[in-house]
Figure 1 (cartoon, rainbow, N blue to C red):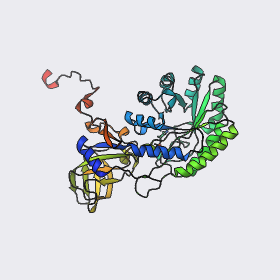
Figure 2 (cartoon, rainbow, N blue to C red):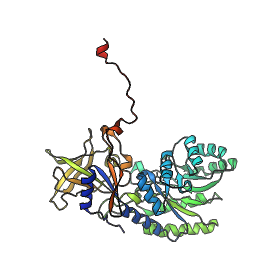
Figure 3 (cartoon, protein in one colour):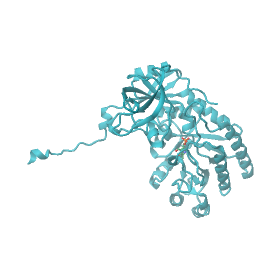
Figure 4 (cartoon, rainbow, N blue to C red):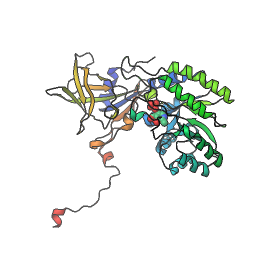
Length: 414
Ligand SMILES: Cc1ncc(COP(=O)(O)O)c(C=O)c1O
């Protein structure tokens, strides 16, 4: 049930012309569609809460859009918590799920009133001892191998995330000794998980774990839904998953004797397909083996192909009906910087605008100033209008926070 991006190429070209390239463009309608699709899949559960994973795309206007849809936030740093509060979320709408951060950072978040989620025994014991009255959620590692890539498979036995299910007795001892209040139980097994049986299997482990805690208010099943990256691509069957998990969740609540909230924290599912990244072709370079389309961007703006080997569909929106040829689309960074290899794309000329699809999640938010390049601008397409939601950086941004010290010229001082 995929809804095609409805943004027309003419609009995208206009945006590139008006605001320049490279530029990220997000379609609010697609985000809203995905939000409704996920909540509808769980309509048989009384209390469902979607906490949008801020790390996927953290622009404050996107957060406000999420708020308008009814989402809460899943945050992983105190800065994300503050962004959420700045966007107008109340602390009770935010869950803080960090990994490997200091006790101080967790205490700061707790002071702000957000839901704390702890994923290691050491901090659990320290936090519980100092703040037994603050409700805490526990992130469990269910030891399930899932995820589209080893870097994003986080629920397996060798992963640094969560507290092992085999350590439940130790968790219970800490809870009993500190008299802390555990109000939630959580897992996140990885991103890009296609097989819903993996989710369901891990969910059973979470249900089993949840039985040990008598004061739960919610169970958070994390995220990791796979979205399609190209026409005909397979994706997580959300509707079937919703049906099956809702049934099991309702059964669990009946046995537990309390209506709990079912939580998810989707990032990719909500924003990946809503985003497009527009770049301009600087040079078309023929070599003995290939034709390179060299664009005005690089892995400093979109690192996913180089980091995860992800395949973003690329369309030449300046010449969509042109004869298809094979290109390697590369960036301007001073090392191998490949967006796509040997890809069939409508004929590319210098000056053409290319659109990278699925550029909503983990794209802008993972960008950097490598090679002292400016980070791109961002536009939100909302109510049939392009809203600039982040300006392109300038040279001042590159210098910002740098401290120039006096260094005498060695040659002169001789
Ligand atoms: C704890 C946690 N929750 C949610 C997410 C969002 O996952 P996705 O973007 O696959 O929906 C992540 C992603 O890394 C995560 O680490």
